[in-house]
Length: 305
Length: 165
Image (cartoon, rainbow over the protein chains, first blue to last red):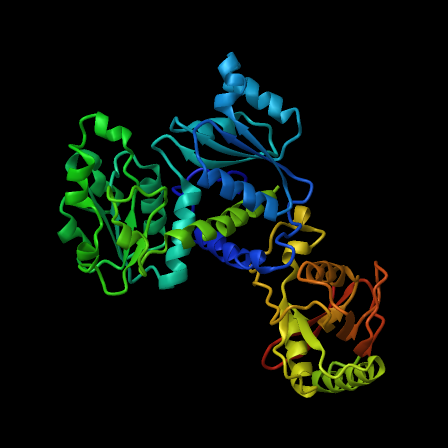
């Protein structure tokens, strides 16, 4: 594997290899020296065209725990505002002999475009492109589910929220289907579900109570506030009333149901505080596992030159 | 070459016992290297009556051939049962050959802390070293030709396989 761009093109064996490798990185932060020397001497560039705190910092920490040198480039504050083209920016960074790019971009397909124009030997990881994919987030979600539930084959999983605009949901659905989840449901208002969502092999629900019945895992999505202005949603308050995850609704799912969220959470918009901070929530575990999963993906790419 | 594993384990146990007497340590921390080293370490751990749990190292993240061979997909987490700082460690592997695995294991150990001492116990020392590393206890010391390879298979039963390429 030279690049990591989407979960779509990957086989079950490849996904499992990533999860297994991530498992072995989970205890690196328990040592005196929180590092392994695997990527010593490699230079990794975090190239972020779109704001992100969690994803960028976990990538940075993952790279540093692998002993790589990390460069953070925030494009908003950089050369493209001076009129330099994307490819010129890339050529300049290539000339500095870097080994890997982590790309976050507001346009779908940006990471793939860059991977096609980059010098051979440089790896590209997609850290979120437009509405298309966010594969490392999906992999850390799969890792979290496997850690708690062990097996995908018996699981009913519901993804709740703005499926239409969510790159996270798209990558999650592909990974869950490939790993053999028993049932994947998507729950959201009609305006926020893609028209032919069933072609992805999922069941659509427009009613939270029906959709959550007996599910083992609830994967919440962040409601992007900018969607409110587009007339797709009435108000935050209205949304919470219909699709917010509350303690009462959580009780409809299986007794040991797990609650997940990629963050940042909007309290009292998509999830109530007592659920987000409650015993069934693994939201902060997801963040910790994100480091191990990103370490695994980076080292698999770096080791397959 | 003797391929009777239980005789070799007995020999290794008695050498390790002498070693511990020499360095005046009663309860060392036994640390095995994945995968064969753990089987041998497990035997030593029982034979020497060690109270503390045994440690396990997977040195995949410390190999010097990572950029050529990539990551072993079957990496196991390393586990050390306690803080190794000021502990006397017996590092255990199945076959000592170039010494590169032991170099990697030492680097990994020191990322967990600063042990009081580290000694090396191996089932077979087959020569052909490429680094200044030596075993203080061995089940057998044998000179093998570069095209001969010895491999421990197991865990039940443990057996030695000699392959000529």
